[in-house]
Amino acid sequence: MPIYEYTCNACNRLSSIFVRRVASAADPKCQHCGSADLRRAVSRIAVHKTEQQILEEYGTPQPGGGPDSYKDPRQIGRWVEQRFEQMGMELPSEARTMIDAAREGEFPAPVKDL
Image (cartoon, rainbow, N blue to C red; front, top):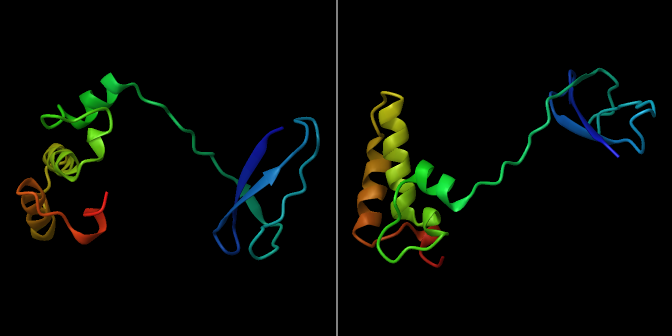
């Protein structure tokens, strides 16, 4: 039972069309504007990572960190710094301020309660 995704040429939004069998003909229409002028879209996939892959990608966790330590704002800051460096870009000053504050234990309001 495949789900095909289409991008509407009229409103440029994504629509998902459920088909009971691969052999069944799909008559796609945009779920948002009703247009039949659609083009097939490449669907996203999910890739599950092992703990080792997470550590390789995000770096060694802070002391006392567990498998979810990559969610720690300090780890996220380290990852952001590495990505900007890899792209040869300068880290915006607002990001630098938040990363430095997280390293000192002062987290932005959205992550304080995590």
